[in-house]
Image 1: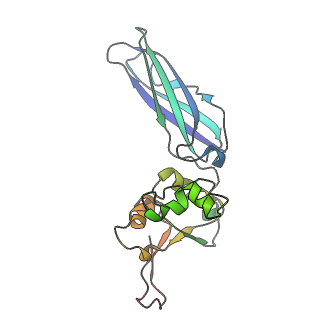
Image 2: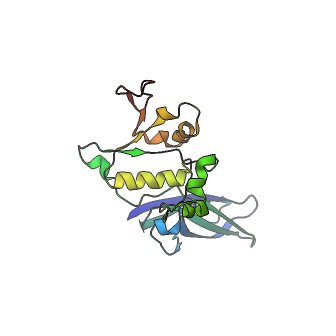
Image 3: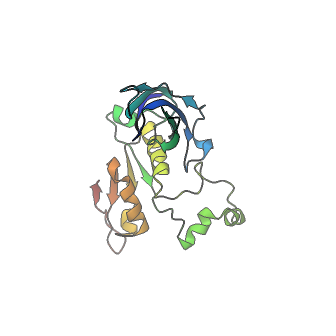
Length: 214
């Protein structure tokens, strides 16, 4: 469970802000609902920086979020003239699991493959469910046939990994090289800083290879 604070501003160029309501809802985005815990919608208890002003900043404390997804906040604001405006926005991904990886002195890594590309001709073996069935595959990933560049999917993978004590991913980058799909997909992960990129081995396939922390 996690606690958070949601803040936003409301501005009216002509009249004072009279009333604002906000709700917080599940929003998995591209993450299937089966892969995160369901939660009921919440009406946020808002506090304001001012009263009856044309610009006001609101905040609300949210406790015991189950996480594992993004959330969607829906805002409805009414001014003193009776005009109503609505908007909505998505929050960043909220973790489901505690980051256990940083709580011990044991460094654990796992192989990770960032090459799942819907535009790849060979992708039919992953994305075409009829083709998968024809070949005898009876199941798919819990997150479905995903795109390795999808930020929500990446956050979910990292949440799972660090929640079970994995410190870094080992990526076979050298097999693809610069400016390929896998290389460009890794730029989405770069901010997490716990990858080891694998450089090419010798042309004969022998040798130990070199590793670079990123």
